[in-house]
Image (tube, rainbow, N blue to C red):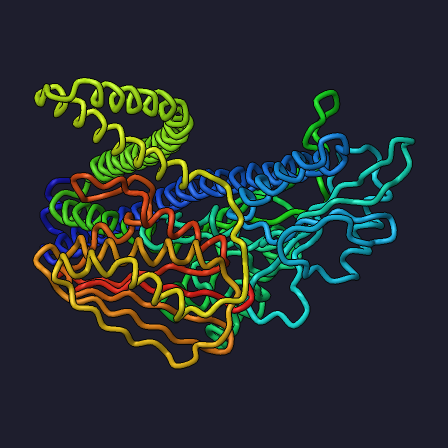
Length: 595
C-alpha cells in the first residue's frame, strides 16, 4: 500500500493539498459570510429596538403635552361657566391663556349653540366651517368633559407652513341642555417639532412625524413641514421610486400601527443616492376624556405617527468592516492549517459578544442622558419654587429697611452706627430690586397694544439713558428710518426691552465705545437694532443668554434678556442676537404691525 502511495506523482499531491485548502477556505468564507449576515441582522434589530424606544418616548411626550392642553381647555370652560365671580374668572382665564399661548395656543373661543362668539382670546382666525364642525361634534358628545380633536388643517390664505388643530368640548346649561362649545386652536407642528427637537438616532438619524393623512408635522428639513410626505420625498430626488416607504406609510403608519422595518430611499440629509434605512414607528393617540377616573381611557380617533430613521450603514458598515477583517484572518489561517473552522467560529462568537457589550454601553449612555434630562427638569421646578418664595421675602425686607431708616434718624451723631444702618438700607434696596425683577419676570401681564411710532419710543429711551451713556463715555449713533410706519405694540414694554438692551451694551463697554440704534420697516413688520462695539459674546454663551438667571456679571440677575424675550413673545415678535468675539454684538427686535 505504501509503495503504491509512493508511486503517486508529487504534482498530484500538490494539487490535492491545494484543492483541499481551497475547499476549506471556500467553506470557511461561506460560513463566515453567513455569520456576518446573521450578526448584522441582529445588530440592526437591536438598533431598531433602540429607535423604537426613542419613538415611544417622543409619542409619550406629545400625548402628555396634548393632555395638558385638554386639562387647560376644561379649566377654561369651568371658568367661563362661573358667573358669581365673573371678574376673578376673567383674570384667571387671561392668566391661563397667556401660559398656554407661550406653548403654541393661538386662539380660545366660547360659543353659543348657533356659533356666536361669547368670549374669545388670541387671534380669532378659525374658519366658520371649522366652527360649525366643532358645534356638530360637541353637540353629539355624551358627557360634559369629553374632548373633540380635529385633524390638522390650514387657515384660509395662509402663507406659512403651520398646521393647526382644534380641541373642543361641549358646554351645558344648568338644566342640562346643550349650551354651545369652548375650543382651543393650537399649532400642531409646533407640538411635533418641540417633541422631536434635538433627537438624533445614531450619528445622522432623525425623527419625522406625520398626521393620519401623511402630512409632515415635523422633519429635520423644515421645508418638508406642512407638505405631503409622498410628494416631498419625490421632489428631493425624482429619479428614485419610493414604493417601499410609500407602501409602509400607507399600510402601517397611517393605520396607527407600531413596528420596525427597512426601506430604500433616494437621499439622506445632504447625501443623494440609493440608501437603505432602518425605521421604527409608533402611533400617537390622544385621550378624549382626560378627567375620567371611573372608566377606562377613551381615545380620540385622531392619531399621528412618529418615525425614527437612520441609514443602515451606521450599523452594517461598522459590523461589515470588522467582520471582513475577522474572516480574512480566518481565511489566512486556513491557508496555513486546513482545520481552522473551530477557531473561526470562536472568533465569530467572541466578536458577537463584543457587539452585545457595545450595545449595552450605548444603552447605558442613553439612560444616563435621560437622567440628566430629568435632573434639568427638577432644577427648573426648583427655580419656580424659589420665585414663589421670593414673594414672601419682600415684606420682611420692607419692614427691616423701614426700621433701619427710623433708627438712623434717631441716633444722629453716632456716625459708626449710622453707617451700619445705611449699609442695611442699601442692601435691603438691592434685594428689593432683585425681588422686583423676579416678580416682573413671573408676573402674567398681557401687553396693552396701541398704535405707536417706534422712533418716538427710541428717542424716549435715549433721553432716559443719556446720563448713563455720557458717564460711560459712550458715543451714540441714531439711524432712524424717516417713516417706519404705524405699528401696534405696548410702548412701555418695548421701552423696557430697549432700556435693557442699551444698559447691557453700556455695561459691556466699561472703557467706552459706540452704540448704534437703527429702525426700519417693511409691509409686515418693523425692526429695531441695537449694535455695540463691545467685546462680543462667547459662542458657548449664545444659546444660554436668554435663559432666566443666566449671567456672566458679578452683580447681574440674569433676568434682563429673559424678560425682554418674554415681552417680544407676548407681542408675537422676535428677539435675535448675532455676535462674534472682538467684533461687538447686534440685538434685533422684530414687531409685527398687527400683533
